[in-house]
Image (cartoon, rainbow, N blue to C red):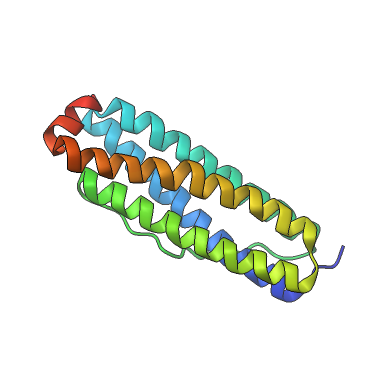
Amino acid sequence: MQGKPAIIDALNNLLSYELAAMDQYFIHAQMYEDWGYTKLFERINHEFDDEKGHATKLIQRMLFLEGQPDMVTRTGYQLGTTVPDMLASDLRVEYEVAEQLRITISLCEKERDYVTRDMLLVLLDDTEMDHAHWLEQQLGLIKSLGLENYLQSQL
């Protein structure tokens, strides 16, 4: 099915954010594991898998629409060097993904591509209600418990 170029371009833009988030989560998970923060490793490794699932859905939809997925571009990729920086960077990219999802959902409605819109609504819910919410909680715990106590809880 031939998709509209504007939709395919918007999906590729989203893909660039999802791939950046996926790569960022992957590296952060490996850093947490190396540092011995088992709980953070397990959760962030799970987030890596979720982002890979999001990227897969975008790729599948683009292929269905006869588009060419851009697997090279990464938008928003920024590694942290400390646990708070890493969590904040992951939260930042989730906020960016959510904003791009809203923009693309609006475009899909304008272009009357309701199947793509419905798929993106699921991704938005996952991004806001799972990924971003959990990261906000962790940064809040660091503020309320202090970094040392938080890190001890992640062993």
